[in-house]
Image (cartoon, rainbow, N blue to C red):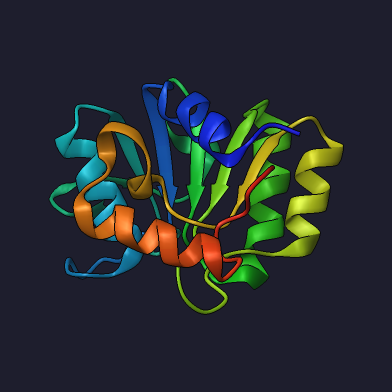
Length: 158
């Protein structure tokens, strides 16, 4: 099993990333923050929300298969009850890198989704946030990474 740090570096090496659960209302919603930061850092990032046509002034897609040209990686930022369906869609589309967002609380992590993804050859990071690692990070997220690693919200290995 790779370390989370190594898996995060591999995840963030992909240029086309979808973020699910992005809210129609901009603000401090976790998925929106991830979406905004990835966009600011030069990623080709795609918002996914079945109930929105635009998010943050950008086109929004109702599902992953609707993203033109597809994506290489997905951040799941929805309720855990929706994560397994998203993981199944990732497997169907051949997406091999998925990050289920979680800082405090349950986040988007689903044990069933994790198990399904890994059994289908997907590298699944089941906790933490892409903004806690690499060039997307900031001091606040680095601090949260340390706290969340100590409390088990960021896995040490994936």
